[in-house]
Amino acid sequence: MKKRAIRILPTSYILLLLTFLLTGAMSNLHYPEKMASFISAMTFSPYYADHAPFYIDDGGAYGIRWTLNYEIYFYIIFSACLLLKKPVLTLTAFFVSAMVILPLLAGQQATLSADGYAFHSARLNLLTNPVSWLFIAGVFIAKARYRVVHLPFVLRLLSLIVALAFVAFCFADLLFTGHGISGSGFPLLLLFIAVIANHDWLDAYAPRWLAFIGDISFSLYLLHTLLITGLGKHLRWTGLTNGVAGFILYSVIAIVLASLAFRFIEKPFLSREKRLLPAQ
Image (cartoon, rainbow, N blue to C red; front, side):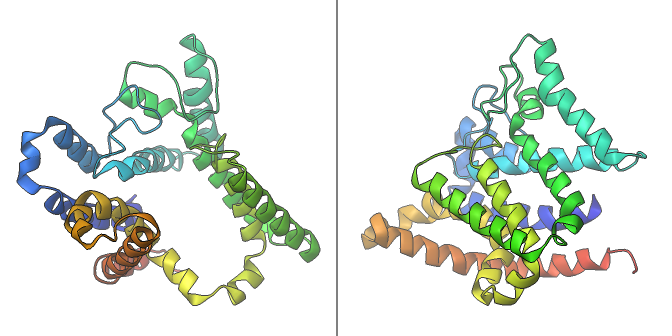
């Protein structure tokens, strides 16, 4: 929990403050909706019961942070399960209870859709939303990774080719769109498994710039909506904020800002996180 807190909270709160300052600062106090969104981002909590799977105003300046609500929820539950003898079994049982048994007992139909269930509580809807199946899938992939990497090379390579082709086909034909394991999560999980299986040789050929984008991805994730909601209104005079020109402009600015955030915010805390690793 301490390592996860160091990894997520400092960068999240510093960039949240930056977003607050660039999107109106204290003037936000005059808008209840903006303040509710800001408080939600501060506390990693949902506040809309009927806006699945976000349960917040996903169109606002802090909307992108809705995924962190699920992430923090998962870390808390998983940390509690680690105190028990069979943490993975306990974790699976908990989420099966939350995302299948509880809704069925409440008279609702089980689903894998990110539309979730129709409880009257935003928190209960988040706790039972099938989006969390992606975390469970991640746990089982982590448990199986040592076996996967020792499969025959031809089989591993074939899995990567098939996964890449399947993802390209799905995206081209707009299949498996949306959030959750029944949406884009399904083909991307297959690609994720295939990449892990082939990481021994992919690491050697992966371009450094692509690895760098991966390094700054957390800051990029936290910053990219700020460009439109905060900086966008200051850049409209350029006439370059729409179409292809806007995409290129926002992408360049986002990468530059994320690089700075990674260098001066994330890396100092990442160094501290590494010091928390157990001795080998």
